[in-house]
Length: 635
Image 1 (cartoon, rainbow, N blue to C red):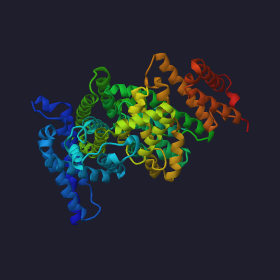
Image 2: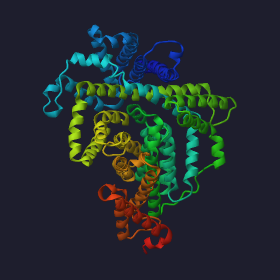
Image 3: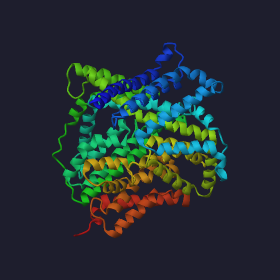
Image 4: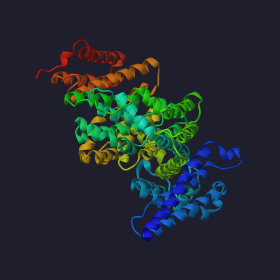
């Protein structure tokens, strides 16, 4: 009884601090302190927001009675510490050496509290990486070879973490606090105002009545949800509840249904305009407007989802999976009429970013304002589906605070790690080593980077993986002459792919829990359906036109040839297109498709590449248009 009452009280405290996080983020983005004439550092604001996140995590339901008072003490320490650092930061950041004991105690407290909260949220992986770099900072001179570093006193390392603007309170945490939180708030309010129903109905209309339309609904819905969620697992749980049973009813195997949903939902982190949290970090690291990142991600995201569409279509024809014609769908006019608030919100967001050149987070705040006003008005006139009462608005804001605490903790520890990489010189030493390796084989360096990205991603969220690799691997790729945005997109994609790559594959695990299939079978199907995502990052490097780098002709050619290649390779892998493919023709499709996607211009010039692409085009035309029966096999 006492435990239940304690958890209830802790939940109330968590709700209050959860509300605090998005409210403070909005006030800062709209420059309210500056307008009031207050001199406040951004580091001071993120101190308060991280403190609130710590309180929320420590106030989560305890697993045993003894943990209730322990969690209460930890939450109280976090709250007091954040207020203290907020007040003292302007002084301590300018004169750390004058207050060695104070800054040491702050560094110890911040480090221990943040690591313990992170352990509860995502486990030990990021903590082990931090501890390894902490030991490197203290005992770097013990490391043999080119990675040998200069040692630092453990106390100095902790002072650096607690008081320096390039460590825990630095860029990574600030982006999460001032950008990611705003977009999660936008997504939460959009869902609360009926945006989920709008996306679902729109997906059903777009999918049509063709082969495998139940799975195409899943692809479209996940892509639409992904534009605002940016989280693979939450995307699976949001859309999979509806789409996975729909696919199973149509005839897809449970593992196939789960795999399709996992791959579709993972792509949400790549789908503009919102994408995942890492995309905002990329914009800040590259010092480019967020719209540049969103535009660069557009063509790869389209290819990603078109690949899924083509695979579903060919497999449905091969396995005689019927079209579900009894799916309840509204007319387009009804969908638009009932979803106009979501359309208005997206219009405000996109207009602000691309037309008015607003910072992404400022445009998102105005979109939030449109949602709140529109939803409140609709709630007053009792329009079902889209209206929001004040209680619903408040609940969405609180849920945003809860949802973003994990990201704040991850980026806080990632900031510590990035700071250690910088201050110890480890990043510089590793870059020299990787550059030497890349001079011998750039392709080998890319394979190594891809492998490291996936391995790190097996135990880390995408945000953490990207931040680490953006500091360790991406600079080496850039110094080898690779376009900066291509290098960063490369590590981002492979970090995201950990969501569908065995053995952990969190998105596949979530989908398996809904489909009833085994986790291993779902992982295998997701790996198959997501094959193109393992090739796309290499295209960024060798064919940067896919990221809108170069002339319009080059961009158009790269996209068209990549689209052609994915159809050929998919047909070859599935053994079926509009009709079954003869084994010889199947192998020919596969070989030609791989050749089309390869950077042949770097091996034999543009003539060779264009010739192979022309061959692929002729093959598709002969198979689909001029002689459709040429690919048919008689039973």
